[in-house]
Image 1 (cartoon, rainbow, N blue to C red):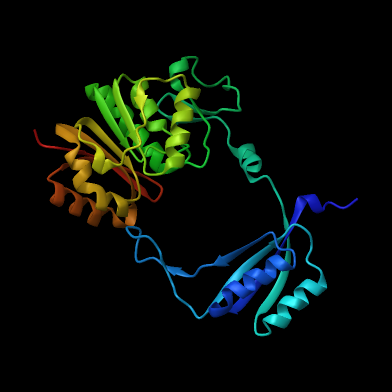
Image 2: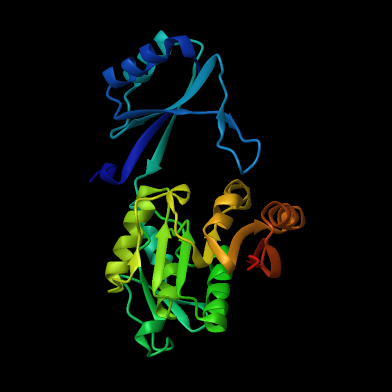
Length: 302
């Protein structure tokens, strides 16, 4: 019996004249392709900027087939595009989400908090206190708690919650919503999570429902739309983006409030903190690191 249902076939085509892109795509579908995707060359000046796609006279493409393309199909493409290099590959067609779930187990997140995937049981070594269990369905959002930057931010959220019992907290780039959940479980009443990715907002809302949390808001707003000031502002985002957002992050922080930043690469932290504090007037209170990542608490003058 054939196991073709567990495989797909990829024809790698290199050196197609860009002027004949439409002809190439049409021919591929004519010979039975299920999809065509271009390999886009790009450059990225640094992490503050989106990639710039390079304009090239030729293109490389991946052509996907649900069944092995016959010799006649390959020869027909080669005949129409004699200068192109064609290679056929057989790929395993896996359910990647199921494969990934196999490796995502319950774990101690920060302090006494544990993250438990929605499809797992709470392990016996986890706290019996239900408030310390955060159920997560990751979806496509960043922030499942496994990354160093999220753990660093969570540690500081716990520290600030125990230090000052903040009433309000804004989580910028909320992802799966786990940092907002920690803050709310520790007593912050006015907790808002925002994210410019609609998929992240959807995932965060699902996680709030999963945890039976109704006191956290996930509005369809970006940072520039927020007018309220908060006792604590959390931003677990790559440092280049933090630099772009620094003035808006400062604007929504109350006088005397504290900002938690995470996502700063260690080899850039000196330059980053100097620029951030000098531009905003915030005072660096403390910083820590995990692996190649740095996080910090900053304070706004009263």
